[in-house]
Image (tube, rainbow, N blue to C red):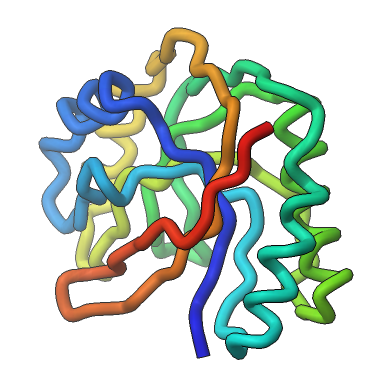
Length: 179
């Protein structure tokens, strides 16, 4: 079994600019520069045969040519009274939404069941420990909410494997698809 997802990588200059913001929040497990990405679709644990089928189907998703996205603002995900993650937002972009939809459709054609939910593009900056102070989280978000990246050219996406380790997830690029 292999744990897979499709994602957009971010250029080094954008990743380094984000890394400079990753301070000042006790209880944050900040993502390293090589862990920063924008997920298109998460496929979960699948067997090797389905992974091969998915890889073939993703070729069909790699159409439409290059486009640009931009990061804008920050926020948090959580449930109830607990915040789980801090993220950088991605400005609304029809081409990005279409690409994410094509990656989801590739899973369906490869007979892979994936969770049904609205696509909310974001870049996870940190996962938060249960004891993270809500007031400090709010202050961090307020301090960084004006985040704005320059345009980011998207001309490819990747199929990544994810291995959960004691130090967090390790991502490996399995295949790249040029738009």
